[in-house]
Length: 84
Image (cartoon, rainbow, N blue to C red; front, side, top):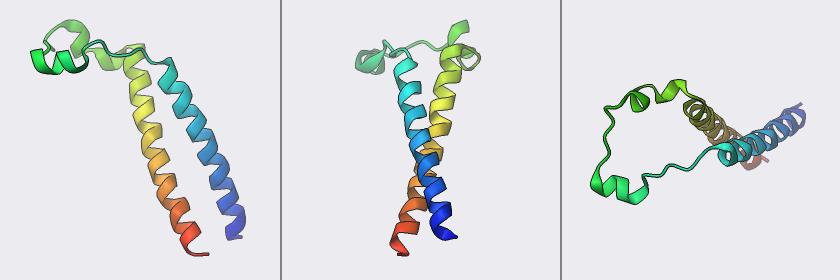
């Protein structure tokens, strides 16, 4: 029983890995970089305030969600492998 659940989790884990890779490659790079951190960036414009509603904002949010799922599955699969 436990072996079947573990196999399903490994398949889900592999799918999550592929999704994270695709989401990361689709995203545009942020131009600010280190110079934006040093010089400071203004976040008072309309785009910055509504960034979560744009395509880029949704992609970033989805990447974070799948990253959290990835970490949780990593911990669960590690626990399963330690119990063997």
